[in-house]
Image (tube, rainbow, N blue to C red; front, top):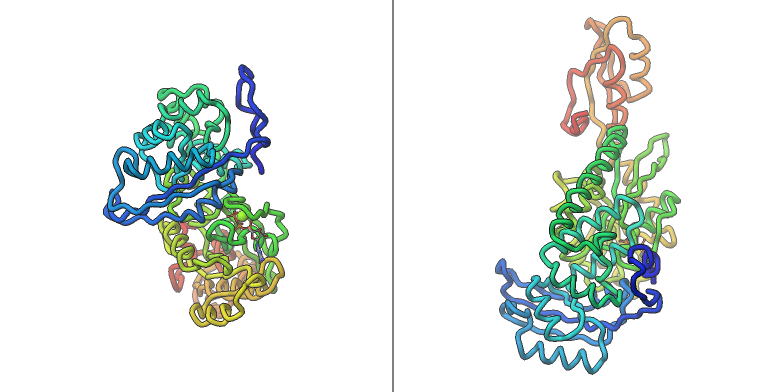
Length: 451
Ligand SMILES: Nc1nc2c(ncn2[C@@H]2O[C@H](COP(=O)(O)OP(=O)(O)OP(=O)(O)O)[C@@H](O)[C@H]2O)c(=O)[nH]1
Ligand SMILES: [Mg+2]
């Protein structure tokens, strides 16, 4: 459990606090399936997944309660009878906290805590807690902190209660120093400050990005725990942290991969997705997720061993819609085929997803095919171009032969016209050659980022 990592750092020494490692919290999970939510859509909870989240956060699950309702109860989500049942359960299993798979309004959270007499968390708080534990770089720490502060703002009264109890534990880790200053004005000021600091990091990253505009880029995306980082490590030896946990990765790592024939591309591994990912988090992680938006190709990694493959694919698609401004090309990559229980599954899946790839990041099966696919698609991204080369630039003319496949040189024209095929990376280099001017590009893709 990673709880001890930042345990001692933030708190003032004015009271004793048990070491965090010693703290195993006993959690009851609760979820309400709602037929008609606030936006009219039904909301289906998934306590198995919530249990995995709770486990990642270091809690032990000692009980569960589910309910179906037409509409959420405004005061307590559950309604009185069910809340009483929950209270009994909590007492009988000696729970320290209740975690709801639904999002609670500030009032519902407050009321439930009053009724149950123990801490109540909702799904967003739990996910935020995991993000706090797993944030390693300055950027991801700031991003999580921003999301946490935004979440906290309308819930200050309840958070104060948590702080008063101050036993520590899931969801009580405030966003850094602000934990003590929990006061609306200060939080607002902190939010602005975090935004400024993140904008500064964004600017620096953008400069780095600009230098890579002409590279072919592939991003690994997918449901959390699908094996994106394992695949990254298998392809690039990047040494990204891999763990059987949700949200092990929160940062983006990019490495160059050399392909046969002297070509290369950039591969990025980044934060995983989840059903109903809290919108504050998606917002805060926009800079990290921009790696996904700027990719030429997405490897959508799917854990082939889960029961609800389709639902996970849909959830990822849903998050991608919010993250991508365009429609990057996408390839489905089913991972962990070494661990399939049902040997028939692979056969059926190949029929259902004829364009997908089936790999094992652990054993390396299928990985070469993925690289071949990149080569193929990269080639497809090549376009034919007509340029003119001004007099007195013979070196530029010679360089064109190195950068692409020269199809025709028309010396009749003055200046000479050259028709050639180049890929995106070399297109960028070509336009910077002295004396070279582009007359025609066959299709839109080359240079479509304003390069
Ligand atoms: N059997 C098997 N397990 C794998 C394979 N690839 C990854 N895993 C395991 O799956 C778990 C998650 O792997 P990660 O690479 O951390 O997954 P991720 O998609 O990066 O996860 P997040 O960063 O948390 O979103 C780890 O326990 C890996 O060892 C595989 O090909 N076969
Ligand atoms: Mg990862």
